[in-house]
Every structure is written in structure tokens, then in C-alpha cells.
Image (cartoon, rainbow, N blue to C red; front, side, top):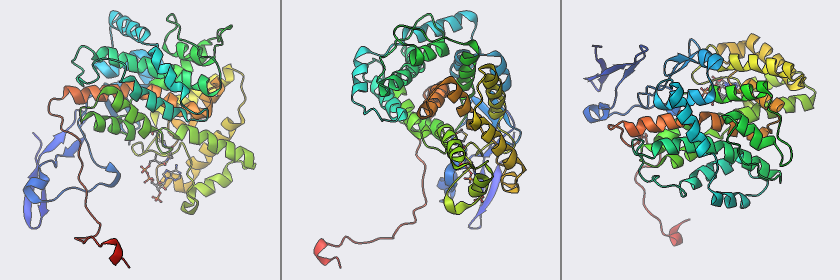
Length: 430
Ligand code: CMC
């Protein structure tokens, strides 16, 4: 039993319970604070606020630890697949062979979009960003299937909806890529595994199947796996926020896609490549950009560096960096952007500005170079992140729905606007 926390407010002592997680993390439970004292807590950007308790993912940002359901990310990256990891995240444990087969069969069963959904693609302009298409199409899919109004994973439809979402997000991504290029749509092949099928839908043509190189399939599968969950980040919190109102899975995931889109979150992988291309075009070896990224006046940042939680290293970045190196060697690709990235990393890790602020490469610093090598266009990078993050969002949605005590998310604020004012009719306004 942990001692309660005590705080003094207006000369009154307030006692608050302390919650201790299974990894020893401690939190002061302030949910009763306003009732007993009239105070709320203020925490800009939620940097020190636990919005929930969760059993899905553990991160220790000081030590660079990431675990899904207790299993270190390094073990999953070395031995698992994206689909097995998706099962682990959603259902809480590694599947037995039959369970994995059933999950895999469900993914195959639901891989095709409802035929009528194809017409939605016609309405988007050819320059539409694929994240806008993805969010719209996921939301639209809730119109096509029964059970969306139930909002309870225990309902018989949850397994199908979860599988449909994981499977179709990849179909939507590939269709939107081909549509924006005026290419004919390639349907999924049931015999292909998840990631191979995505590559097939992206790059095959009607007369010639894309050659599936095992090292390419594995590298992309690894990118999906490493993005599969990351506890209460901007997009996952958004999914939980929407789910807390009992909105359906598709609506919650569509909101997650929108939250992920920005360059400070999932959009960073696209921003990294654009930054590296700018550096290359300008003839800079990276050193000028490092100076610019330290100068707050120009609003530039070293994209793919820094993290709200990791203050030592991002364990995903270490794995991605190694995979990037190996893949480029195996495909015999020499990408000048990789050399710039190495130089930037080396310079930043020696620079006091980055050292003092504990800024290290994050997962997005090298993932874009892998995707470029595979032939995935830059504007699709954040969609790849979204495909990977889907199991994490579904697991968080399920957790919200399974928790009978979940209340609707509704933060408070401290109002700083004008005090009581009066309406002035138009004729009297000066
Ligand atoms: N380049 C230059 N300065 C930086 C950077 C950067 N990439 N990141 C943070 N800083 C500085 C920032 O200016 C501030 O300096 P000061 O204390 O002098 O005002 C200090 O470091 C703390 O930054 P912050 O913005 O308060 O940190 P945050 O925790 O709010 O933001 C972050 C975290 C990831 C948004 C930020 O580091 C960033 O913008 N990085 C670049 C974008 C990026 O790579 N995002 C992907 C994150 S990983 C994928 C994901 O999970 O979303």
C-alpha cells in the first residue's frame, strides 16, 4: 500500500491517492482534487499527465525501453511479424498457431473493399494527399458494414471489424497510390501474406507481377511492426478520445489518421526526406542546416530528431538504422540522402544544443530512406506509419470499450479571456 500524496492548497491539506504501475511508475490520482479543493491541474501539452491506465505498451524514455504487452521491441523485431504482433497488441498475448491462422484468414476474407467504395476514389483530385483519402475512406467504410453502431468489442462483430480495418487500410493506401498516378487498380491476391500483398497491390501491373524480394518484404514488415503501438501519443490519445464518446471503431481510427498527419508526429517521415532533399539541393553538407535548426527565429527543426518521451535513445531508431544500411547494401542502392543523414546524425550527436536537450534520432530519421529504396513515394510515408499503427489504435479502442469504468474524455481548462462583457448592437460599435 503506497502512502497518499499530500498537498497544501490555501492552507488546507489535501490527501490524494497514489497509483503505482506494474513497472513501478507512480502517479498522483488527482481526479477528486477539484471536488475537495476547487483546484484543477494545468499541464500544457499533457507532458506530465497520465490520461489513462493501460496494459498494452510500456515505454521507459530515460532508458530507451519499448515493450508491447511486456515483450521487448528488439525481440519482436528479430523474431515476430507485423501480423503476429498485431494479434499480440489487440488480444493481449502471442497467438497459438491455430489462432494466428484464423486471424490471418480473417484478414484475407476482408481484404477487398466493398465494391461501391471504389467510386469514392473517383471524387478525389489527383493531387489529393493520401492521408486525406485514407481518413475519409476509413470513415466512409463504417457506412458499409453492420455493427458499427454497437461500439462494443464483445459484440460478435469486433473481430471482423478489427481484421477489416487492418486489412483494408493497406488496400485503400495502394488504391489511392495507383489512382493518383492514373494506374489501373490491382486487387489483392489471397495467397500473398500481408506485407507482400501490399507491395503487390502497389507495384504489380495487370500483365506482370511485381517481384517480391524477401529482404524488401521483411524491411517493410519491420517498419509496420516498429510503428504498431507507442502508448499515449497524439494520434492514439485522439483515438481514445473519440472512442470514449462510444463512437465506432472506424470513426475513431479515421480521427487517429488526421492526428497522425502533422509533421511533428507521423508526418515527420515525409518531412525528413524533404529536409534531406533541400539540404542536397542547396549543396550544404548538413552543417549549415544544423546551425539553422538551432536558431529558433527561422522555425526550422532537425526533422526525425527529438521525442517527447525518449531522452536517451529511441530503440526503434537503432533497429531501423541497421535495417536501412543492410537493405541498401543488399539492393546495391547508393542513396546520397543516406550519407547526408549519417553526417547530420554525427554532427548533432556531438553538438551541445542537441546534447543538452537530449535530442536523438527517432524512428522517422531513417525509415524514409528505406521506403525510398523500396520505391514508395514520399507523400505515402505517413500512410505507411498509419498502416503500422492500426493494431495499436485498435488495441486502445478495445481497452476503452472493455473498461466498464471509462468515462467520456473531457479535460478542463483555465479560462484567460475577457471577463463578463456585453453585446453591443452594430449601430453603436465605434
Ligand atoms: N530540432 C531542433 N530543436 C529541437 C528539436 C529538433 N528536432 N526538437 C526539439 N527541439 C528543441 C526545442 O526547440 C526546445 O528548445 P528550447 O528548450 O530551447 O525551447 C527543446 O528542444 C524541447 O522541445 P519541445 O518542442 O518542447 O519538445 P516536445 O517534447 O514538445 O516535442 C517533438 C517533441 C518530437 C515534437 C520535437 O522533438 C520535434 O519537433 N521533433 C522533430 C519532429 C519529429 O521528428 N517528430 C517525430 C517524432 S517520433 C514519431 C512519433 O512518434 O510521432
